[in-house]
Length: 70
Image (cartoon, rainbow, N blue to C red; front, side, top):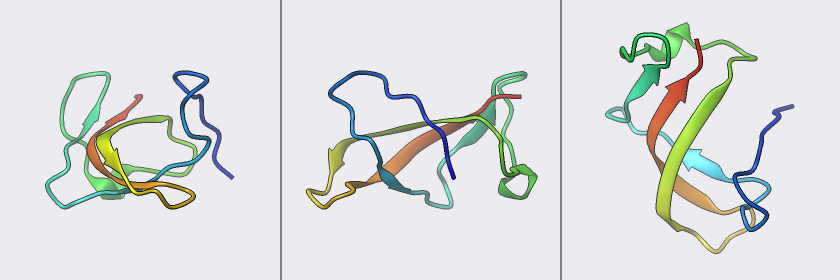
């Protein structure tokens, strides 16, 4: 199960994000790229996406950047 915090009351409860091979995944500590195989269950991540989402439930969009708290 994932836990998350919404940025506003108008935010969706759940969003499915597609992550492309060129989507940057960076760490907060040193602002360096983080390899996908270094991510582990329980890591706190911030996903930036939009502005386009499908009208499906849950909405689906493209991740623009993933930031990993480290």
